[in-house]
Length: 384
Picture 1 (cartoon, rainbow, N blue to C red):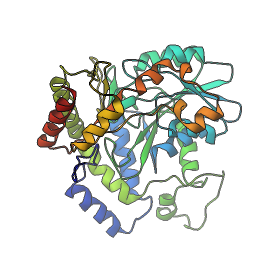
Picture 2: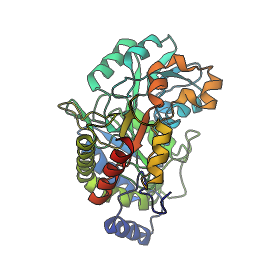
Picture 3: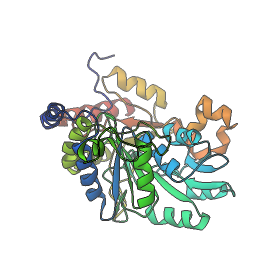
């Protein structure tokens, strides 16, 4: 194995982010303050008119808050694709409801709405589609599905900023809420963090209250208003899910760079697609006309005629100095979900089949051309 393996992913953070965070720390606002408010306002503007954005300390927190605000609770069921990170389903458990796992589309690995329709019951109240790898779930079919079955939609957009479906930015549509992730390796980062966006004023008010201990006003308001800072009221048993000003300072810089970083990832993906066209790989498709792909991940799939299987391919890439990963191990293959809900592989034929052959190749906006060349050379060498 190489001592200096190219990582599968690295954050794209430079001097501007470091300066912004340093200035935030020197300002004295170490928790949620004016920079969080500015980040929320500017993020909402990026999504579109009429959108409210609420910063949180993780996308997981945002999903939890969305379900809480919708009143999802015991005896309810929520549709969740099996092809996702565990957080998407665990928040359903945290509100006392039941996640009902759904298979995925064989081309995009996004939720299969036809399979989802077979799993709707009188107890089903919501669906959480995941915009996998940065390719949005088609907006109009999703909305029609939700209308037909009377379901709330909470979009898991952890991979999908900035992205768009049918010309509509993810986060700007009429769904109940959309939640983005700013984890270290996401398309923009605050280290840890996330953003919930919504057009529903009542939902936004509930989320703001529950984000910070159920206070009747947030921490920033407590220290900038004429009302004494010590005087507040707890109106609900809330959570501690707020973002901090130093994190928001980084987010503001990243927000300004978001489209340039997306274009760089798109450029790298295009190079991969051209270079790997003759290899025994099924490659991710570019976005359809009218859509914008965020290109958070480049997920290739080994064909049966490849000279080695997926695990062997990953090991050989690592031996030659190229990191890679797998997105995702479907939920129905994990011990907790499998045992708790008595799940089997044949319940999810597409996800079970595709899992065995997927591999995520390095794709991050800070990649240098020579690093892209290394990935292309190494993958080609291993598979020819």
